[in-house]
Image (cartoon, rainbow, N blue to C red):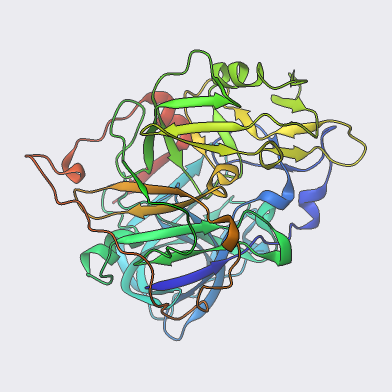
Length: 416
């Protein structure tokens, strides 16, 4: 097992600039408009090493994207100068290039190269990297010195693109093809959490893992970490009109994104909630008791009120709900407010794709039992991967795209 410690980076000054009445703004990879959030609750970053000799980079660990994306020393574009640069000294060229565009209009493009990658001591040889040479990516919201992202989807929807999990699986680098995500429920002492590759730390959760299969129904895309929630709740009240739907478990999103109709139905049960048409968010009292809840396979998990409510900046008496409407997009995305409440085990064993969910062990909500980043860690629970049954392997199921989902996630194209 190999572990990488993640943390909450300190936002740059630009993150704190007020361009609306509600303070901290940042661009979501899923939204075309600027939305309000708490700068203290942006994505989680950790260190990876690229190349030989190794070059160290701070990157966002993102279960909602596929590739390792890094800023090249040949980069030209709006934000290239603001990021650390990767020098392709030991890499090999591939005949492919990649152009990734996010919903907020930012984008990155460049050749796909292959190089050595080390994540928490786990060394991956000949791993594909998107070497961004042309960029309008802006990662400044995450903090100073962020160089890119590590995508943790098991496969890519793009032809000839190979994510790190696919290489790890193919090269048999782990005895157990899982990675476990622990995000500390408290940001005290600058703690963030950890990503544990190849095992499970059973000291971090209570009870047993609820193994929920990856959803392949309408509104999902191949290789993405969607699982079906069979119930949604505001406190003890079921959200009106909700039916079983796929939710994306996404460490790279710092809020809970929902369709407009769901946001309206949910906030109808939150005392004092009002919709701000100007900012397209719900304003709520800064104190309250209504939880946000979802059930998976009949087991309910809840987000406390103060964990999905963010300050709207100095001078504002109201707060912002991080259960945010997605406009015209019919998508459900579970970001960090929910993921901080559970221990999540992402199983990328072929034919057994699933996410194991369990509530955190609140008596051990710290990083005290983990090993140091960059080295193997002992122990942990084990699970037996489900063997493929029937004629179809999940990896062979045809990709199903819904136009609104494709538009919201990203426009992914590969030039051969």
